[in-house]
Image (tube, rainbow, N blue to C red; front, side, top):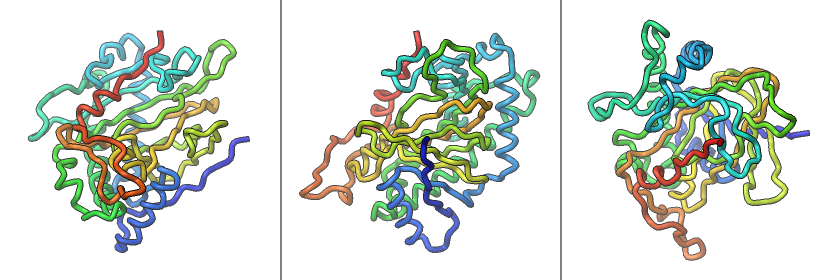
Length: 310
């Protein structure tokens, strides 16, 4: 039987920023995951986004395939990818939809794909509102992460990470009942996230598990429970690299529970031109820099090679 993990709870509005930063540091060193509360995203907006996700994923497949994923934006069908390429399964039992940085003064690429207004009225406006609000929460959180790393709280801003950051929202749908041959099935197979920070919201259905020691065998998996109104935040591989492996990018997966599940993962990554190099505050004579400097965009392009099922 899988044990449950008790994640720390971080209050984004706490007036004691130093104590909050210390709590974040401990969470990121020990687990790589924590809950984030009082983040400014209204509970009603969460519910609206879940409802809009249900409407999108309820469309006929041919309608969804009109928006099939291009340049990391759009629809990915059921079983089309495996987050763990070593898995023997035919593919992860989920479908998803990616929305990248929104159009604005600093983003004019216009790469996002949107369902037609006559097909899903209000869909785009709701999702854009959510995207902006979660991005704002992530930017406020990154200042506390800087303090947690014993840096000035505006460090990541001065480094250019928050100058038009790469915020990607992924809407996810896990079907409740699967008709597959008898085999191990994963909603999302074991993986760590590629980037800086991930802010995850769910509809309350379980299935998320973490493995704190990703290089040890056998792997020990622990359930992460839903906390109403909270984001589940985790460290990505880029932040692990940035901190010279002080902060851990934890292995995680989603297991089917027999219940339909909806979630929204927001990946906060730095501006592609930002240079990621091991922080001096995370290095010492006994722990010298493990990685050479690299441009964030080059790092992510190298990591964003999703393994699709054949």
